[in-house]
Length: 529
Image 1: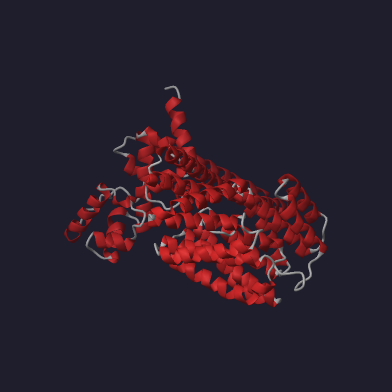
Image 2: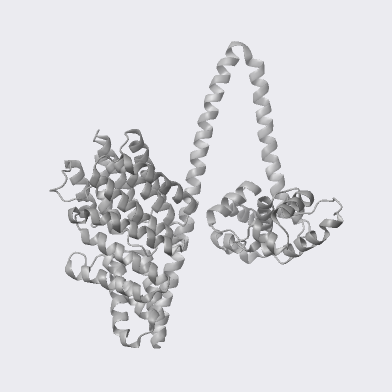
């Protein structure tokens, strides 16, 4: 997750043994799984995958199987393979729900929420975070319940941070600190948790431009780092070093130039060693800003180029991963649909064998005809969108074109302002709502809705969606440069807040996804007349 130190907390939590041995006994399988994660994973990830999978398949204890699946999910998380990470976590969730393993369930819900949040899929993330609180009271062991509550608020702070809700993020961190105080003396590596909360809070205050508070929190974290040799070279420490360098840089204090350079390079070294993409990207950016500030253009260009490369890599990873998730969901839905169809066919065949053969044949023929008609209609619609003139394009998107109804005198002024809004492409504003548009048009939401229904035969949501889809189809058809854009860039350029919501809406309204539409345009252009 961007700039939030969850790595070590997540690692220790996945181990399943956050408490000291004197406080809690662990099974032999727990200990072996922990050693795979801490000792095998850093040197041979393929072997780690194999060993965890072997334990899962050769152990009958439900909690051990859940633990193994959770660690398998974390291994994929560590490799930035979110689709497989979520796949394993969903398997573990299903098993934990079946056996009422609430300790694991609270962790897994939070883990799934964190993975979705990592991609900016906040609606999906919120669904899993909402599942955590009802489970927490069901955890019997008090220490596990307190630690699970701490962990939940810790993840939630990162979720708010990703959405730039810094005040809410700080509030969640403080709630996690309240829980941490209760059990800190009993925790293994408790410095990790303390430093993590201090750094997270410092980062949020940094974003709020309260640099004095941020600097004080980072220095508190640094004091803990200096007392723990094992922590000094960890990713947790790297985020603290990066934070210190950035705050000094933001304050533009020439006396701190040596400290800025030292802290940022130390953070970068650890980030590269751990192949942490987010930290590398952010540190490259800070270093480029630092060298620009002191007038060292050679190093400025070097680190700015590195930053842009990391930024592009992250964007590609994010888009590819979201595409993979959507594809998996599509395949899963198809699998369910096909399974249901198979059951339906079997039942009908049995009935037909008894008394209803003619009816079965009739239904089958009707179904085939309807499918053929649906496919033909979809193909015809796609052909219309890709061959009609630019002037006629709006006619093929319901909710865009005005109907032939004569405009009532009382509606003339409002409809004229609505036409002007469309002409100025105000619908590309991603923050637009029914209320804000009504205010812009000097009317109220009810009147605007009535006008849309009367003269566009649609509601506001469909109206806005169709206008944005019209804009992107127009761009792709008549300005070929846009066909080279990433899907995420196309989405934001026409007012969508996310790659996934744009793709889902495009597929729903047009019948194919944006990538297919672009490929279709290329194919028909190169097709011989």
